[in-house]
Length: 294
Image 1 (cartoon, rainbow, N blue to C red):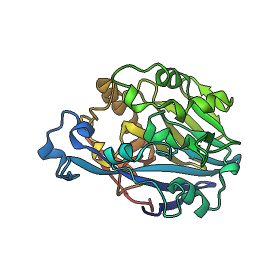
Image 2: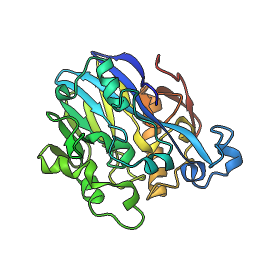
Image 3: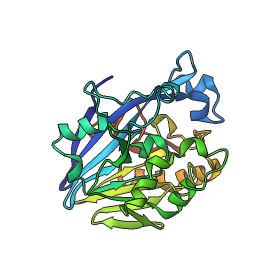
């Protein structure tokens, strides 16, 4: 058990925090698809179970409407065996999740969160939408928040098949819908001033990134389009992606814009880099200013 790591910077008029809400480790072959192990292992060496070091990150914006939380991590509802499979460690020493502790550290209580944005509804991104209380009941983690997700993603999550069922767990999102707290969007849309959801399909058909703009400064939560900085090269695409060729086309569309417009790209799973601007060198993309000080 560890305490959350928090990186903070000013983005225009708003304070923005990257909260490392837990560590995890996934199979390197699955994470890099067709890329041979001798190549990807130079960037992220695997453990004895062929798993690479990763983490889960939430992005918190101190917006004019109130705190906005992008992604909620893995939550507290799964079994010890499940957490062991994925090497998930997201519990703080006092029993709370690291997201809870991270929010408390920056002075935000769950009931004050105005909005939660889910890029998609996989367990490691939306597991903290809800929590299991001491009596075993499932409750909303942010009872006064509106939750935002693509309408197509919710349908996809509630109509799984043999390949997708292992990533979607009803307890992470069905209670939110039952409580009437979801705002379903379709396609690109500004959901509050300065925050626009942009479809970035491939990993799932309805994956969305979040573009944040204030006073000319821009940041982009790139979600699982580019889960770690090692996935910046165009063909470095996860085996987990249900439509890898769509991912490739999306990267061809999004990364040039990110580089040209100087977006601060926030990564969801990189164990070492919360965010960075990127630069383009031909068809290659590299980090321009890694870390939390860009």
